[in-house]
Length: 243
Image 1 (tube, rainbow, N blue to C red):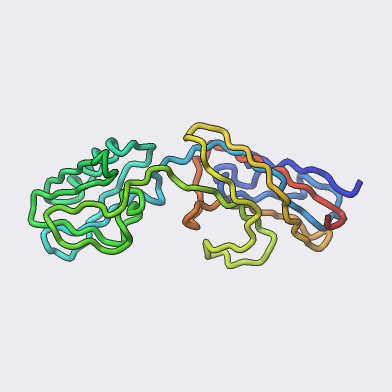
Image 2: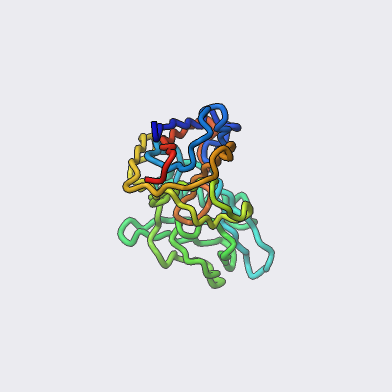
């Protein structure tokens, strides 16, 4: 037998509570140490990622010309634009001394944020700027500010599957060994199954493949964090020869 298919389920990983950042001990799955190539065939996971999550839920702002940064932290969940306007007001009011009004224009698809004080200034330290339609530049001091782009609550466009075979800087989110880019077109709560077209094999020295890590990243190169009760299934092909 020159190759076998290997099913890796994150429930069987070293730490099942981190399905998006899984490490597998392959000694528990594979007894033949003569294999020296592996390639990803498919990946299956539930789209359980909210459009507002822990990686994009902060709005950093300043009030009334004072340079001290205030942070409005949005509750992670799946929002419509009108729901997010309400949440923005709630958290701006909680973080600042002023009272805020947040409106969504369904024609222009933009937010307007107004303050009861003299001014609000949104800073580039915010992590939710793309979602609420602002650019990465700091906005001007003003009693109200309107997003210059449209509100985007569609979430990530794709998920990159990255393996731990090739050398990389473990402290960096910039990986080069991307095995697949999985389109995320289904709504939250939908199962995503992706067959890799023309998968690229990765070679290793026979007998050395013990721990094997697989990570998911979103379209902004941030870890695609999924809830701890989610599972991801990968099907790999282990081969004695590159083919």
